[in-house]
Length: 100
Image (cartoon, rainbow, N blue to C red):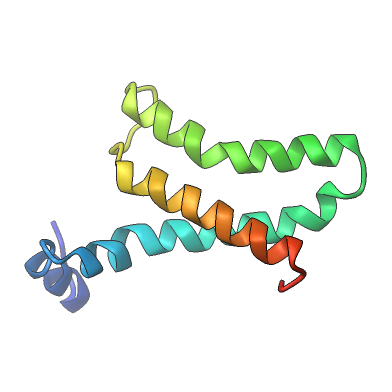
């Protein structure tokens, strides 16, 4: 059951791609970007930390795969995969250019 003004509004506008992005994809992009930004400086401090960074890079894709094959509760969404790829590319470029 959905309650609250925002939930009712988002359901009423669910066919709008911008609403879909803002409600479902943007939160995924933000937590993934935060994770990458926090882990990247640590990855420069040795091989074990690089392995941890790789695990962080792969984690959302593994979660989506687990959802797709029903190993984990949740709904597989290709928009999430696209969001994670674009977020990874954007954050990687920003980190390499020392913008973050």
